[in-house]
Length: 402
Ligand code: ASP
Ligand code: MG
Image (tube, rainbow, N blue to C red; front, side, top):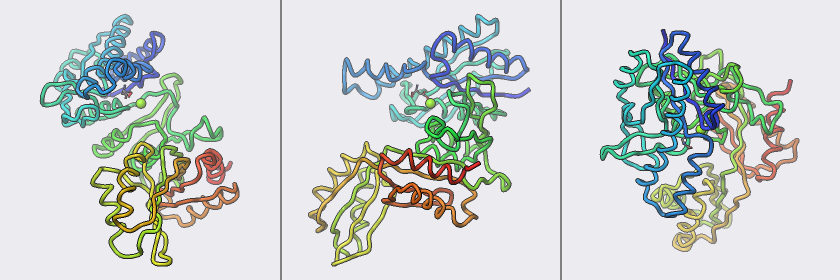
């Protein structure tokens, strides 16, 4: 007998018919003699709808009350799924985050899971119950409801799998797995059978929104094998796990991130310490900087360019605009209409020429590169946003031609 954790995203539990479909998957797994713990997200757009309702009454509601509200979304789907399974004739019980033993940090809206005490879940499983747990929530040291941040249910599922040493953690969603590119944009994109944690982490950060980042980090930390699969087709999904030497793929995927803005500080005096001054100023305000490029000094000045997420642009400009004078630079300029396009693959570590091949694809498509950054398993380029889809297709064709 195995212990299997199955997580269902909001689109998989959106209405009665879909709940019934999930009920069939869950009870099918149970029928095979497994212990089954189910983690659910809020139905469909419930979380967005609740946020909209809150804005109606108070646009500046406290985060504590927001968590009180948003955690209700998962309570609805958990109880409805339990009722559905009950109706199908199986023993089942739904549990809220705190009942399932989730203790979190006190940061409302983006709490971190501190521990999961699975005693109650274990108890219910011993009674041969199917256990349905609300994702995305826990309680903090004040016994208040907390939520884990958008998309947090994936992390709830992995946390239970880790705490209970589950044999498998399945993440059911509305796509069939992890693809080599966004299949809605690139029809020739292929589903991957397996991908490593590190590649998945890069792809997740790069805007391939299949799995929440923190859930992958946690799965890697505790060695939990994940399977990402569709709740609607009965096909096998993509396994996310530690890579083995044999599996190292040259390129596992091409991803695009539109949520990027480029900022340049122009005419910075060409002397030591200025990059330090600029970036420590930003770090102090917790602004995350991604690609950085510094030009070679000319006429005793240089330009420093970098990227931030679009949401951080305003804050960044507000910090740097008055600072320009202090450090004797000329001005700050920015561009929001840029995208980051990246290739990810564990195999490129040992394989020269991958970056060159990517640049060749962009050259052949007539696409200009503004900035480049690389890591062991990733090459990213910053290009103009309107060319991003073309770039993904061109690069994908280059690496995944038939
Ligand atoms: N319902 C929450 C959200 O949107 C958590 C989740 O779905 O994972 O974001
Ligand atoms: Mg999600």
